[in-house]
Length: 109
Image 1: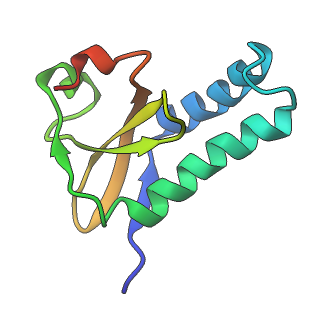
Image 2: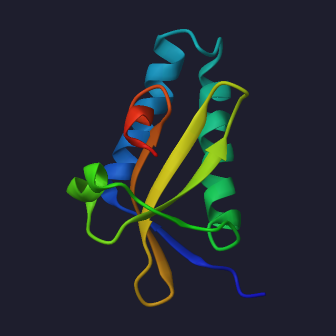
Image 3: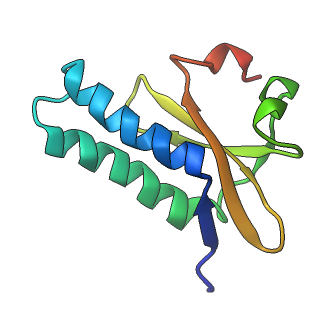
């Protein structure tokens, strides 16, 4: 099976970088390395599963991140579900936004 081409929009890369710092600074993780590993596990999951999960059309609320978005989910813990929004042009996956149920979950159907 051909590995999918996954591209992270620069705003998503910046968000993930900031997220790792926030998770450590807000003491969700005791070591910065653990926060980085948490983010890396999500990135690895996206790269290896985005083409395997059934993509769900994104609610209208998320159109501000791009048109014709779809999303998949990633369950990092029992209490946290991440939503990965993407466009799929030309057999590539362009990640446009990442959020979780604690931040924008109320906008997910």
